[in-house]
Length: 336
Image (cartoon, rainbow, N blue to C red; front, side, top):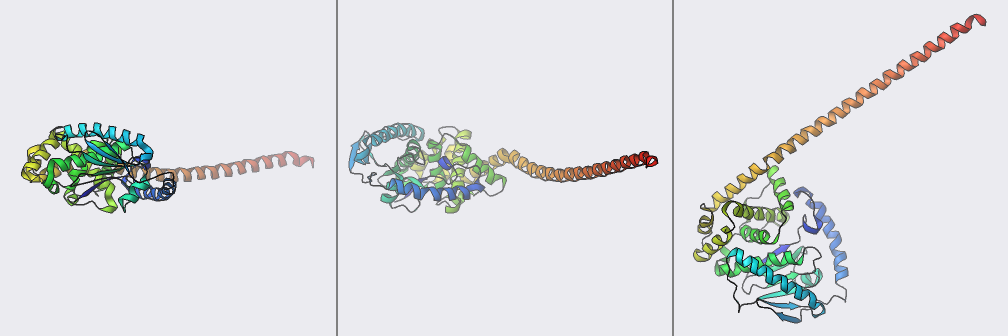
């Protein structure tokens, strides 16, 4: 069994910062805020046991009976997202095969009952029974975004079945982000910054796991690669790729059918597209660095010139004062 997670990223969403290099600050803020949030959400008023069950055409929803409205709204959003994502990825929804959906009304309950070590996780989906568990509170990420991300994983599981392990992690997570996130500015900024500084992670290194200390970049690159896939090869490319993988069990054959090139060539094309796209950014960064140094030098020169002019003006003023004094003394001298 494999478990896929959606993350409350350290440098995006509710604690959004610009640029991969600033992740440390957002991480610090997050660690400061989370204990406070936990203390609030862990109060007795927030029951966490999912003892109530609601059945919809395609989901079996387990929820806290204290918040029936949240369960209904989550179920409704899930139905809409399942229909949309299934159409995008080529999955024929099976009417008699509901997806288990665990709806938690607080982040604390989600993390505590799920036994999750990483407190930045906001949703999980697992292979086998395709069970989805979500923090539906919207405290850090909107409920609809989390649902779309995890439903994408569940749909992929159902399309691929036993071939799920043949799908690289960067494709699986990239598709989940592509289907769940409309705005790409944060991912673009993270990838642009890494591309400009030569610190991109090679996609082949993200085949089975993401580095815990660079997860933001790993997720951003994965999403960028899938957006590139759709932009260059069409909206049906993910559907074609998953269908071929389910049939053959070969990712090389799957991506070749969708793109007419193997994985290595696709990765190279995507990497080159980043170089072209962000070359201007790098030029601006270099120009900015030189410009900053030049401006600093000019400021020092201007300061020195101004000081010299002020000193010269002071000397001239003192000389004029001396001449005026001498003239007065000479005028008054005969009368003494």
